[in-house]
Amino acid sequence: MDHDQAEVVTPKKLIGFAMGVGLFLVLVALSPRGFVFGVDHANLLFHEAGHVFVGFFSQRLEPYGGTLGQLVFPVALAVSFWRKGRKVAVAACWIWFFENWLNIARYMADARALELRLVGGGQHDWNTIFHRWNVLQYDTQIAAWVDAIGWVGMGLAGLWLAWQAWQDYHRALPEREHARVF
Image (cartoon, rainbow, N blue to C red; front, side, top):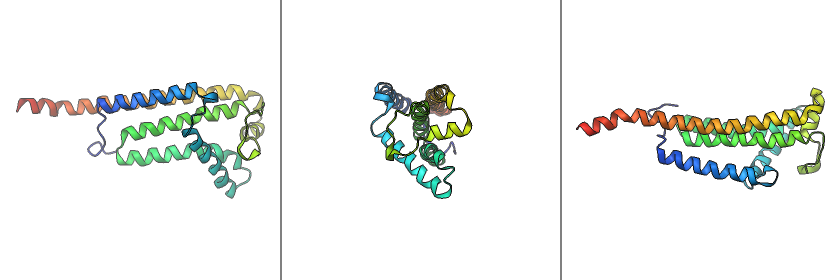
């Protein structure tokens, strides 16, 4: 990201972002099973597309495709926005990326119980994966770590944007002081 061409994160943008993310996190926390209408429907679509894409190349790797699919889209958008210098959009994409970890954790935690309704009624990805890795008995413990990483990651994305705002503010100080002198 070229700082000369990058978006300046003003206090207004940071406050607007914080309010939007705060509302989103309230929706995440209060949603039944943590499923946020709209966002998680898109995540589910990308998850299923990942199965199709990876399954086209390898049936053995197909169970991994869903999780990869839902993670690739926010990362691809984050990279695109990074190249354009759109800091607020980059932070939003990282929050989206890490919000996916909460969904993945919920899916992992269900690997033994098999209670979640699956789209298409196929195999349970994380049951298959954990069985292959011989860690099925640790599904809920692994899921707890993944969930924690999701929450921490969302927090770090917000802190990164606050840091960008702080840097932008201090980069502009000499210009503001110079403007006052003349």
